Length: 208
Image 1: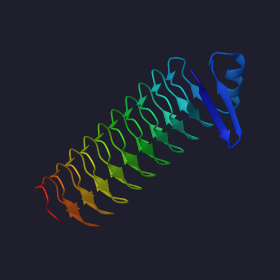
Image 2 (image 1 turned 90 degrees about the horizontal axis):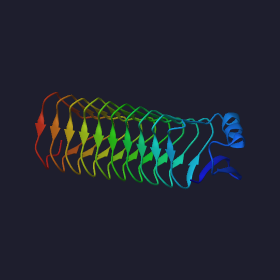
Image 3 (image 1 turned 180 degrees about the vertical axis):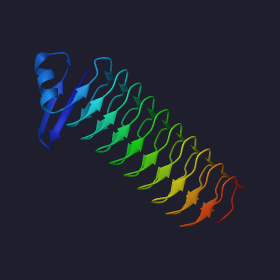
Image 4 (image 1 turned 90 degrees about the vertical axis):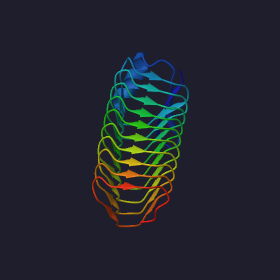
């Protein structure tokens, strides 16, 4: 295992054995807490003031920036990037090459698949599923149980209600509000500031 602790541009430590006294001292000084039952892959870079919980598994090439909190039983796939001050609750799965911006909060039981990009300050509610290649802009909020399919793009400060299903390649504009229990078909376009009322079913290809 090769874990690199990066604090400044030219200041790093290679921590090949997390159990050594010297390593423990470095971690303490930099306020880095890694649970003994966490598994850290090769070439993982961890900045200062980071907490990694019990039974977390972090795969190779992951970058974790300052102030990140990772709860128990989290999985983070290869080459993911976790921005500053991100909070990841327990039992979350982060796929390969996912990028998470600063200040994002991801609540428990969320699934984020390969290649998803989450903008800064987004809030991802419990049991949300986000499928590959989706782009979520700054400040977007998801209520629980939403399902976001492949290749979706969601604009800044949009709000996605609970139990909503958004089909492949949908585009949702900034400040749009999608209420609870909405189903949106593939390739739908929803403009900026549009509100979709609760329980609606929008068929594929519609422009709103």
